[in-house]
Image (cartoon, rainbow, N blue to C red; front, side, top):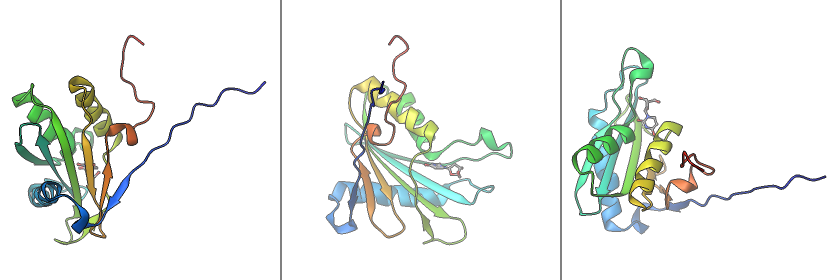
Length: 162
Ligand code: THU
């Protein structure tokens, strides 16, 4: 007897900088600037995130580490927690993420949201019924785009009653 296979596919799009829409270039630039205030004395991995809310507001945040390592919080969760705490009725629609090493101002690193952040992004997508477009800056200067968290978190946990 063969068991049924359940398969999924993910599609990401790699944009050159110049092919990005202007508003996304601005969002990524703000995430880049937000790396400056990252508090990452333990990892030296400075992450900045910028979110566009549906009403046009843009906010930024960065990772905040702690000497007790698990207490540290990623840039994405600080940011989405802040915007949802202050604007609980306004959906986040685009999220840009940039990472660089503390060793050099232009020493960018590849970054995609960690598992906890993927689950957190998923929560806000589910709450508002809208995907959050993700833009991840690459050291090449290109930007990797996911149309929503499903592209990064297939088979996610989303309903206590299913
Ligand atoms: N980090 C983020 O802030 N966002 C990510 O998407 C990946 C990882 C942080 C957590 C920790 O402070 C440091 O980067 C190294 O993992």
